[in-house]
Image 1 (cartoon, rainbow, N blue to C red):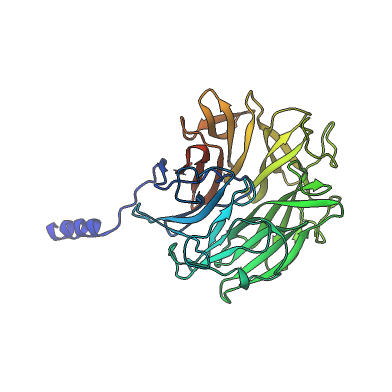
Image 2: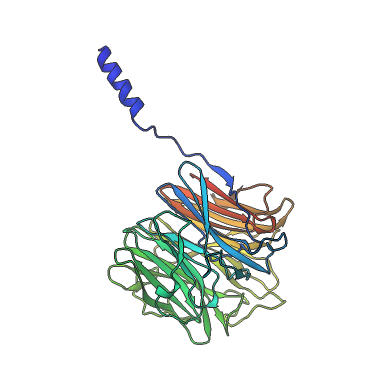
Length: 421
Protein backbone atom coordinates (compact mmCIF):
# COMPACT_ATOMS: atom_id res chain seq x y z
CA UNK A 1 0.00 0.00 0.00
CA UNK A 2 2.82 2.41 0.86
CA UNK A 3 4.37 1.83 -2.56
CA UNK A 4 1.04 2.57 -4.23
CA UNK A 5 0.63 5.83 -2.30
CA UNK A 6 4.17 6.92 -3.09
CA UNK A 7 3.71 6.06 -6.76
CA UNK A 8 0.48 8.05 -6.93
CA UNK A 9 2.16 10.99 -5.21
CA UNK A 10 5.03 10.88 -7.69
CA UNK A 11 2.60 10.92 -10.59
CA UNK A 12 0.77 13.89 -9.14
CA UNK A 13 3.99 15.82 -8.69
CA UNK A 14 5.15 15.05 -12.21
CA UNK A 15 1.87 15.87 -13.93
CA UNK A 16 1.14 19.47 -14.98
CA UNK A 17 -1.30 21.16 -12.67
CA UNK A 18 -4.25 22.91 -14.32
CA UNK A 19 -4.45 26.44 -12.98
CA UNK A 20 -7.57 28.53 -13.55
CA UNK A 21 -6.88 31.64 -15.60
CA UNK A 22 -7.27 34.86 -13.68
CA UNK A 23 -8.68 38.07 -15.14
CA UNK A 24 -5.73 40.45 -15.12
CA UNK A 25 -4.69 43.71 -16.77
CA UNK A 26 -1.12 44.72 -17.57
CA UNK A 27 0.47 47.80 -19.08
CA UNK A 28 2.63 46.87 -22.04
CA UNK A 29 6.18 48.08 -21.24
CA UNK A 30 6.50 50.18 -24.39
CA UNK A 31 5.41 53.71 -25.24
CA UNK A 32 2.83 54.13 -28.01
CA UNK A 33 2.40 57.02 -30.41
CA UNK A 34 -0.49 59.44 -30.17
CA UNK A 35 -1.70 58.10 -33.54
CA UNK A 36 -2.30 54.59 -32.18
CA UNK A 37 -6.06 54.75 -32.62
CA UNK A 38 -8.52 53.17 -35.02
CA UNK A 39 -11.94 51.52 -34.92
CA UNK A 40 -11.67 48.91 -37.71
CA UNK A 41 -8.31 47.32 -36.86
CA UNK A 42 -7.13 43.93 -35.54
CA UNK A 43 -3.91 44.80 -33.66
CA UNK A 44 -3.87 41.69 -31.43
CA UNK A 45 -3.60 37.93 -31.88
CA UNK A 46 -2.77 34.85 -29.82
CA UNK A 47 -1.26 31.47 -30.59
CA UNK A 48 -0.14 28.70 -28.23
CA UNK A 49 -0.21 30.97 -25.19
CA UNK A 50 1.74 33.84 -26.75
CA UNK A 51 -0.06 37.16 -27.21
CA UNK A 52 0.98 39.44 -30.07
CA UNK A 53 0.24 43.17 -30.27
CA UNK A 54 0.94 45.71 -33.01
CA UNK A 55 1.08 49.43 -32.33
CA UNK A 56 2.20 52.75 -33.70
CA UNK A 57 5.27 53.88 -31.78
CA UNK A 58 7.32 57.07 -31.54
CA UNK A 59 8.21 58.48 -34.96
CA UNK A 60 11.51 60.03 -33.91
CA UNK A 61 13.96 60.42 -31.04
CA UNK A 62 12.67 63.72 -29.67
CA UNK A 63 10.06 64.25 -26.95
CA UNK A 64 7.67 65.92 -29.41
CA UNK A 65 7.64 63.10 -31.97
CA UNK A 66 4.88 61.12 -30.27
CA UNK A 67 1.95 63.28 -31.29
CA UNK A 68 -1.05 62.27 -33.36
CA UNK A 69 -0.20 64.39 -36.39
CA UNK A 70 3.49 63.91 -37.11
CA UNK A 71 5.12 60.52 -37.77
CA UNK A 72 5.28 57.04 -36.31
CA UNK A 73 7.08 53.73 -36.49
CA UNK A 74 5.33 50.36 -36.14
CA UNK A 75 6.31 47.68 -33.65
CA UNK A 76 5.10 44.14 -33.05
CA UNK A 77 5.30 42.97 -29.44
CA UNK A 78 5.07 39.41 -28.15
CA UNK A 79 4.20 38.34 -24.63
CA UNK A 80 5.47 34.80 -24.12
CA UNK A 81 3.59 32.31 -21.94
CA UNK A 82 6.08 33.02 -19.12
CA UNK A 83 5.12 36.71 -19.19
CA UNK A 84 8.26 38.12 -20.81
CA UNK A 85 7.93 40.74 -23.54
CA UNK A 86 9.97 41.15 -26.72
CA UNK A 87 9.40 43.53 -29.61
CA UNK A 88 10.71 44.42 -33.03
CA UNK A 89 10.04 47.30 -35.39
CA UNK A 90 9.13 47.05 -39.04
CA UNK A 91 12.36 47.95 -40.85
CA UNK A 92 12.80 50.35 -43.73
CA UNK A 93 15.04 49.89 -46.76
CA UNK A 94 18.16 50.90 -44.86
CA UNK A 95 17.53 48.60 -41.92
CA UNK A 96 16.40 51.27 -39.44
CA UNK A 97 12.79 51.37 -38.30
CA UNK A 98 10.52 52.53 -41.13
CA UNK A 99 8.85 55.89 -40.44
CA UNK A 100 5.31 56.62 -41.62
CA UNK A 101 3.12 59.76 -41.57
CA UNK A 102 0.41 59.84 -38.91
CA UNK A 103 -3.22 59.53 -39.99
CA UNK A 104 -5.68 58.70 -37.20
CA UNK A 105 -8.26 56.13 -38.19
CA UNK A 106 -6.36 54.99 -41.27
CA UNK A 107 -2.65 54.31 -40.85
CA UNK A 108 -2.83 51.78 -38.02
CA UNK A 109 -1.70 48.13 -37.96
CA UNK A 110 -3.57 44.84 -38.18
CA UNK A 111 -1.91 41.48 -37.58
CA UNK A 112 -2.53 37.75 -37.62
CA UNK A 113 -0.36 34.76 -36.78
CA UNK A 114 -0.71 31.88 -39.22
CA UNK A 115 -0.91 28.22 -38.25
CA UNK A 116 2.88 27.82 -38.41
CA UNK A 117 3.44 30.79 -36.10
CA UNK A 118 4.57 33.36 -38.66
CA UNK A 119 3.41 36.92 -38.01
CA UNK A 120 1.63 38.84 -40.79
CA UNK A 121 1.23 42.63 -40.52
CA UNK A 122 -0.54 45.15 -42.75
CA UNK A 123 0.21 48.70 -41.71
CA UNK A 124 0.00 52.43 -42.45
CA UNK A 125 -2.12 52.29 -45.60
CA UNK A 126 -4.58 55.04 -46.56
CA UNK A 127 -5.12 54.82 -50.27
CA UNK A 128 -1.62 53.35 -50.59
CA UNK A 129 -0.20 50.33 -52.33
CA UNK A 130 0.38 47.32 -50.08
CA UNK A 131 2.52 47.77 -46.97
CA UNK A 132 2.87 44.19 -45.79
CA UNK A 133 5.41 42.51 -43.52
CA UNK A 134 5.84 38.88 -42.50
CA UNK A 135 8.27 37.44 -39.96
CA UNK A 136 11.22 35.41 -41.20
CA UNK A 137 10.92 33.01 -38.28
CA UNK A 138 7.91 31.60 -36.48
CA UNK A 139 7.00 33.61 -33.40
CA UNK A 140 9.94 35.98 -33.85
CA UNK A 141 8.73 39.58 -33.86
CA UNK A 142 12.31 40.81 -34.32
CA UNK A 143 12.51 39.24 -37.79
CA UNK A 144 9.83 41.18 -39.68
CA UNK A 145 10.57 41.52 -43.41
CA UNK A 146 8.87 43.80 -45.94
CA UNK A 147 7.13 41.47 -48.37
CA UNK A 148 4.78 44.00 -49.98
CA UNK A 149 5.95 43.06 -53.47
CA UNK A 150 4.67 39.49 -53.02
CA UNK A 151 1.03 40.60 -52.72
CA UNK A 152 -1.35 40.28 -55.68
CA UNK A 153 -3.12 43.25 -57.29
CA UNK A 154 -0.21 45.67 -57.09
CA UNK A 155 -0.81 49.39 -57.51
CA UNK A 156 -4.32 49.68 -56.07
CA UNK A 157 -5.36 52.00 -53.22
CA UNK A 158 -5.65 49.99 -49.98
CA UNK A 159 -7.11 50.98 -46.60
CA UNK A 160 -8.67 49.22 -43.58
CA UNK A 161 -6.96 45.80 -43.54
CA UNK A 162 -8.43 43.29 -41.10
CA UNK A 163 -7.35 39.66 -40.94
CA UNK A 164 -7.94 36.44 -39.06
CA UNK A 165 -6.55 32.92 -38.81
CA UNK A 166 -8.89 30.00 -39.53
CA UNK A 167 -8.75 26.31 -38.66
CA UNK A 168 -5.98 24.71 -40.70
CA UNK A 169 -3.71 27.73 -40.33
CA UNK A 170 -4.69 29.84 -43.34
CA UNK A 171 -5.17 33.59 -42.90
CA UNK A 172 -7.93 35.62 -44.56
CA UNK A 173 -7.85 39.37 -45.11
CA UNK A 174 -10.57 41.91 -45.84
CA UNK A 175 -9.45 45.28 -47.12
CA UNK A 176 -10.78 48.19 -49.10
CA UNK A 177 -9.26 48.58 -52.55
CA UNK A 178 -10.93 51.88 -53.27
CA UNK A 179 -13.87 51.90 -53.70
CA UNK A 180 -14.61 48.18 -53.24
CA UNK A 181 -14.24 45.58 -50.50
CA UNK A 182 -12.00 42.58 -51.25
CA UNK A 183 -11.24 39.23 -49.63
CA UNK A 184 -7.76 37.65 -49.83
CA UNK A 185 -6.36 34.32 -48.62
CA UNK A 186 -2.97 33.31 -47.29
CA UNK A 187 -2.55 29.64 -48.26
CA UNK A 188 -0.43 28.41 -45.39
CA UNK A 189 0.66 25.26 -47.21
CA UNK A 190 1.70 27.11 -50.36
CA UNK A 191 2.95 30.26 -48.56
CA UNK A 192 1.10 32.50 -50.99
CA UNK A 193 -1.53 35.27 -50.99
CA UNK A 194 -4.31 35.19 -53.60
CA UNK A 195 -7.44 37.21 -54.17
CA UNK A 196 -10.65 35.32 -53.32
CA UNK A 197 -13.30 37.82 -54.38
CA UNK A 198 -14.57 41.35 -54.55
CA UNK A 199 -17.33 41.03 -51.98
CA UNK A 200 -18.72 44.60 -51.94
CA UNK A 201 -19.06 47.15 -54.73
CA UNK A 202 -21.89 49.54 -55.59
CA UNK A 203 -21.94 52.47 -58.01
CA UNK A 204 -21.75 55.81 -56.22
CA UNK A 205 -20.75 54.23 -52.89
CA UNK A 206 -17.53 53.35 -51.10
CA UNK A 207 -17.20 50.16 -49.04
CA UNK A 208 -15.81 50.29 -45.48
CA UNK A 209 -14.72 46.82 -44.29
CA UNK A 210 -15.26 46.36 -40.56
CA UNK A 211 -14.46 42.81 -39.53
CA UNK A 212 -13.77 39.22 -40.51
CA UNK A 213 -14.12 36.10 -38.34
CA UNK A 214 -14.00 32.33 -38.78
CA UNK A 215 -16.41 30.05 -36.96
CA UNK A 216 -14.61 26.69 -36.86
CA UNK A 217 -17.25 25.17 -39.16
CA UNK A 218 -15.73 26.11 -42.48
CA UNK A 219 -17.19 29.60 -42.77
CA UNK A 220 -15.91 33.16 -42.78
CA UNK A 221 -18.13 36.00 -41.64
CA UNK A 222 -17.64 39.50 -43.09
CA UNK A 223 -19.09 42.88 -42.16
CA UNK A 224 -18.88 46.31 -43.75
CA UNK A 225 -20.66 49.68 -44.21
CA UNK A 226 -21.27 52.06 -47.11
CA UNK A 227 -20.50 55.76 -47.63
CA UNK A 228 -22.22 57.63 -50.43
CA UNK A 229 -20.45 59.92 -52.86
CA UNK A 230 -16.86 59.04 -51.95
CA UNK A 231 -14.93 58.41 -48.75
CA UNK A 232 -16.66 59.82 -45.68
CA UNK A 233 -16.71 59.43 -41.90
CA UNK A 234 -20.50 58.85 -41.94
CA UNK A 235 -21.67 55.50 -43.20
CA UNK A 236 -24.94 53.64 -43.67
CA UNK A 237 -26.42 50.20 -44.32
CA UNK A 238 -24.37 47.98 -42.04
CA UNK A 239 -23.98 44.75 -44.04
CA UNK A 240 -23.03 41.11 -43.48
CA UNK A 241 -22.02 38.08 -45.57
CA UNK A 242 -20.99 34.51 -44.82
CA UNK A 243 -18.39 32.87 -47.06
CA UNK A 244 -18.35 29.06 -47.32
CA UNK A 245 -14.71 28.03 -47.61
CA UNK A 246 -15.47 24.70 -49.30
CA UNK A 247 -18.03 25.83 -51.88
CA UNK A 248 -16.66 29.33 -52.48
CA UNK A 249 -20.17 30.77 -52.25
CA UNK A 250 -21.37 33.77 -50.29
CA UNK A 251 -24.58 33.69 -48.25
CA UNK A 252 -26.66 36.15 -46.28
CA UNK A 253 -27.68 35.51 -42.68
CA UNK A 254 -30.77 33.57 -43.82
CA UNK A 255 -28.57 31.20 -45.82
CA UNK A 256 -29.55 32.42 -49.28
CA UNK A 257 -26.75 32.53 -51.85
CA UNK A 258 -25.73 36.12 -52.64
CA UNK A 259 -24.01 37.06 -55.88
CA UNK A 260 -20.89 39.11 -55.26
CA UNK A 261 -19.95 41.84 -55.30
CA UNK A 262 -22.89 42.68 -53.05
CA UNK A 263 -24.32 46.17 -53.41
CA UNK A 264 -26.49 48.54 -51.42
CA UNK A 265 -29.67 46.79 -52.62
CA UNK A 266 -28.45 43.25 -51.86
CA UNK A 267 -30.30 41.34 -49.09
CA UNK A 268 -27.37 41.59 -46.67
CA UNK A 269 -28.23 44.60 -44.46
CA UNK A 270 -28.41 44.20 -40.68
CA UNK A 271 -28.87 47.93 -39.96
CA UNK A 272 -31.19 49.61 -42.48
CA UNK A 273 -31.78 53.34 -42.57
CA UNK A 274 -34.06 54.56 -39.77
CA UNK A 275 -36.18 57.63 -39.17
CA UNK A 276 -34.69 60.71 -40.79
CA UNK A 277 -31.52 58.88 -41.90
CA UNK A 278 -30.82 58.97 -45.63
CA UNK A 279 -28.28 56.57 -47.08
CA UNK A 280 -26.92 59.35 -49.30
CA UNK A 281 -26.18 61.63 -46.31
CA UNK A 282 -22.57 62.65 -45.76
CA UNK A 283 -21.09 63.86 -42.50
CA UNK A 284 -21.12 67.58 -41.74
CA UNK A 285 -21.27 69.93 -38.77
CA UNK A 286 -24.92 69.03 -38.13
CA UNK A 287 -24.08 65.37 -37.45
CA UNK A 288 -26.58 63.45 -39.63
CA UNK A 289 -27.75 59.97 -38.56
CA UNK A 290 -25.77 56.93 -39.64
CA UNK A 291 -23.44 54.08 -38.75
CA UNK A 292 -19.77 54.09 -37.79
CA UNK A 293 -17.58 51.18 -36.67
CA UNK A 294 -18.79 47.59 -36.28
CA UNK A 295 -17.47 44.24 -35.09
CA UNK A 296 -18.94 40.75 -35.24
CA UNK A 297 -19.02 37.48 -33.32
CA UNK A 298 -20.91 34.20 -33.50
CA UNK A 299 -23.51 33.39 -30.84
CA UNK A 300 -24.66 29.77 -31.02
CA UNK A 301 -23.58 29.79 -34.65
CA UNK A 302 -25.57 32.92 -35.49
CA UNK A 303 -23.97 36.29 -36.30
CA UNK A 304 -24.16 39.15 -33.85
CA UNK A 305 -22.76 42.59 -34.66
CA UNK A 306 -21.93 45.43 -32.29
CA UNK A 307 -21.78 48.90 -33.82
CA UNK A 308 -22.17 52.61 -33.22
CA UNK A 309 -25.33 54.30 -34.45
CA UNK A 310 -26.35 57.95 -34.42
CA UNK A 311 -30.12 57.98 -34.59
CA UNK A 312 -30.87 61.70 -34.77
CA UNK A 313 -29.13 64.69 -36.29
CA UNK A 314 -26.66 66.12 -33.81
CA UNK A 315 -27.10 63.19 -31.44
CA UNK A 316 -24.52 61.09 -29.64
CA UNK A 317 -23.13 57.84 -30.98
CA UNK A 318 -25.05 55.00 -29.32
CA UNK A 319 -23.86 51.42 -29.00
CA UNK A 320 -26.12 48.80 -30.56
CA UNK A 321 -26.17 45.09 -31.33
CA UNK A 322 -27.90 43.32 -34.18
CA UNK A 323 -28.46 39.59 -33.66
CA UNK A 324 -29.71 37.13 -36.24
CA UNK A 325 -32.54 35.14 -34.63
CA UNK A 326 -32.74 32.54 -37.38
CA UNK A 327 -35.49 34.45 -39.13
CA UNK A 328 -34.68 38.16 -38.84
CA UNK A 329 -32.25 40.72 -37.48
CA UNK A 330 -33.09 41.81 -33.94
CA UNK A 331 -31.56 45.16 -32.99
CA UNK A 332 -31.07 46.34 -29.41
CA UNK A 333 -29.49 49.39 -27.81
CA UNK A 334 -26.63 48.57 -25.43
CA UNK A 335 -25.69 52.10 -24.40
CA UNK A 336 -27.39 55.44 -25.10
CA UNK A 337 -26.43 57.38 -21.99
CA UNK A 338 -25.11 60.82 -21.18
CA UNK A 339 -21.68 60.37 -22.79
CA UNK A 340 -20.68 60.13 -26.40
CA UNK A 341 -18.60 57.14 -27.48
CA UNK A 342 -15.29 56.76 -29.26
CA UNK A 343 -14.88 54.84 -32.52
CA UNK A 344 -13.94 51.88 -30.36
CA UNK A 345 -16.15 48.81 -30.26
CA UNK A 346 -15.93 45.03 -30.20
CA UNK A 347 -17.99 41.99 -29.26
CA UNK A 348 -17.41 38.40 -28.14
CA UNK A 349 -19.86 35.55 -27.69
CA UNK A 350 -19.85 32.02 -26.29
CA UNK A 351 -22.80 29.66 -26.01
CA UNK A 352 -25.59 31.98 -25.01
CA UNK A 353 -23.23 34.59 -23.54
CA UNK A 354 -22.54 37.97 -25.09
CA UNK A 355 -20.14 40.76 -24.21
CA UNK A 356 -19.99 44.17 -25.94
CA UNK A 357 -16.93 46.38 -25.50
CA UNK A 358 -16.88 50.16 -26.02
CA UNK A 359 -15.29 53.39 -24.78
CA UNK A 360 -17.06 56.52 -23.55
CA UNK A 361 -15.75 60.04 -24.02
CA UNK A 362 -15.01 62.51 -21.23
CA UNK A 363 -16.76 60.82 -18.33
CA UNK A 364 -16.23 62.06 -14.79
CA UNK A 365 -13.17 59.76 -14.77
CA UNK A 366 -12.01 60.68 -18.27
CA UNK A 367 -12.22 58.46 -21.33
CA UNK A 368 -13.21 55.03 -20.07
CA UNK A 369 -13.63 51.53 -21.53
CA UNK A 370 -16.48 49.23 -20.55
CA UNK A 371 -17.83 45.77 -21.20
CA UNK A 372 -21.59 45.23 -21.13
CA UNK A 373 -23.62 42.04 -21.02
CA UNK A 374 -27.39 41.44 -21.10
CA UNK A 375 -29.11 41.61 -17.72
CA UNK A 376 -32.80 40.98 -18.19
CA UNK A 377 -34.09 43.65 -20.53
CA UNK A 378 -31.14 45.96 -19.74
CA UNK A 379 -27.35 45.79 -20.03
CA UNK A 380 -24.93 45.60 -17.10
CA UNK A 381 -21.66 47.52 -17.49
CA UNK A 382 -18.26 46.56 -16.13
CA UNK A 383 -15.43 49.14 -16.20
CA UNK A 384 -12.27 47.66 -17.68
CA UNK A 385 -9.46 50.00 -16.63
CA UNK A 386 -10.78 52.58 -14.16
CA UNK A 387 -8.65 55.70 -14.20
CA UNK A 388 -6.98 54.95 -17.54
CA UNK A 389 -7.99 57.14 -20.50
CA UNK A 390 -8.80 54.34 -22.92
CA UNK A 391 -9.86 55.73 -26.29
CA UNK A 392 -9.52 52.73 -28.59
CA UNK A 393 -9.70 48.97 -28.13
CA UNK A 394 -9.76 45.59 -29.83
CA UNK A 395 -10.71 42.14 -28.56
CA UNK A 396 -10.17 38.57 -29.75
CA UNK A 397 -11.53 35.40 -28.17
CA UNK A 398 -9.37 32.29 -28.01
CA UNK A 399 -10.15 29.04 -26.17
CA UNK A 400 -12.72 30.57 -23.86
CA UNK A 401 -10.68 33.66 -23.08
CA UNK A 402 -11.11 37.27 -24.22
CA UNK A 403 -7.81 38.99 -24.97
CA UNK A 404 -8.23 42.76 -24.72
CA UNK A 405 -6.09 45.45 -26.33
CA UNK A 406 -6.79 48.78 -24.60
CA UNK A 407 -4.90 51.85 -25.72
CA UNK A 408 -4.69 55.32 -24.18
CA UNK A 409 -2.87 57.17 -26.98
CA UNK A 410 -2.99 60.62 -25.40
CA UNK A 411 -1.11 59.11 -22.44
CA UNK A 412 1.08 56.97 -24.75
CA UNK A 413 -0.04 53.77 -23.03
CA UNK A 414 -1.11 50.32 -24.19
CA UNK A 415 -2.68 47.80 -21.83
CA UNK A 416 -3.63 44.17 -22.34
CA UNK A 417 -6.19 42.34 -20.28
CA UNK A 418 -7.36 38.75 -20.11
CA UNK A 419 -11.00 38.04 -19.27
CA UNK A 420 -12.18 34.47 -18.76
CA UNK A 421 -15.91 35.17 -18.65
